[in-house]
Image 1 (tube, one colour):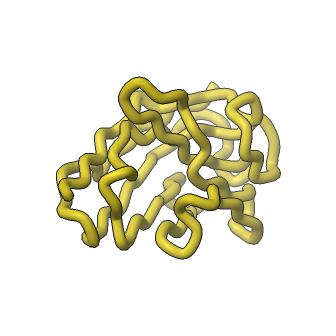
Image 2 (tube, one colour; image 1 turned 60 degrees about the horizontal axis):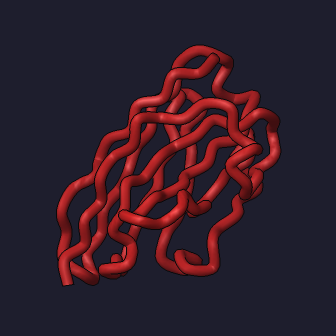
Length: 124
């Protein structure tokens, strides 16, 4: 089992930037993929970005490509989500998730453990 703790959320104006962090403990961090998902009010949870165990492979939702960057530091057991050019529609609770396997899946069922979430609010 993996324990995940997100941080870095907050309130930012449209066009601004935030960096989310997610610290993991439990299983050996460098053996599984990590992902970020988000859920806005009255919407279903959706995929945002994922990174393979080594960091060599990444996937992004079309809505964030070119604006968000996922990265990981296996020495620090931490995954990051750099969010630039934020838009009002990026407002959501952001969750990090630990993968069941090494590849960067884009579906919720690819992930076995979830953090508690961190709120990101973008003002227009």
